[in-house]
Image (cartoon, rainbow, N blue to C red; front, side, top):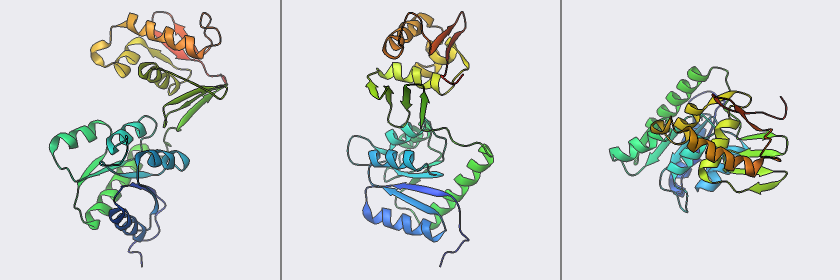
Amino acid sequence: MPTHSRVSASILVVDDEAQILRAVRAGLLAQGYDVQIAMDGAEALRQATTNVPDMVVLDVMLPGDMNGLEVCRRLREWTNVPILILSALGNEQQKVKALDLGADDYLTKPFGMDELTARVRAALRRSTAASGATPSEAPSFVSGALCVDFARRIVSKGGEEIKLTPLEYDILRFLTQNPDRVVTHRQLLSTVWGAEYADETQLLRVHVGHLRRKIEDDPARPRMIVTEPGVGYRFKSAEE
C-alpha cells in the first residue's frame, strides 16, 4: 500500500539499467507519483515533450550519442522542471558540470530509495515555491510558418527544415523565447557567446544577417527579426 496519499506530480525516470529503472519506478509509484520511463536520451526528450513531467530523474551514463548531461542541457533550453542527476561517478568535477548545466541535485549510486524519494519531495517543494502558478515554457515556438522545436533543436518553415549553425540556432532560440520584446546586443552576446563577448556587436550583426537569409522571406526587409536601432533586436511574432 502507498505510504503517502496520492500525489499529482509526474516524474520522468531515465536510466538504461533495467533493474534500477524498475526499482526507482516502483519506489516512486509507492509514494503516489505518476511515473514515465525512458532508457536513452532520445526517448527521454520525446517523453518530456509529449507529456511534460513535473520532475526528471536522470542517469548520466546513457547509451548512444546523448548522455545524461546532454539531455539535461537540452531540457534546460525550454523547461525549468527540477532535474535530479543519478551517477555511479561521484567525483566533484562531474557534480559541478551537472549543476552548471542546470541540474538541481545530484545523487551518487548506489543510493537508498528513502534518500531518493526525500530528494524528490524536496526538489518538488522548491520548484512549487519558486514558480508559484507560473508554468514551464513551451517545448516549441510557432509564429506563422516558422516553428522552433526547442527540445530537438530543429527549425522549420512551412514544414521544411532549415539548417542553422549552432550559433544561429542559439540566437533564434533566445529571440523566440522573448517574442515581441527588445533584446539588447549585450544580452544576446552574453547569452550566446559569453560575457567576454558582450561588446562584440559587429560579430552579432554578421550572424544575425546569416540567420535572416535563412528564415526571412526578404532578408533585406526582415519581418521577423527586426532591428531596434542602437539597442538590439526584436522577434516580431505573427500574432502581434
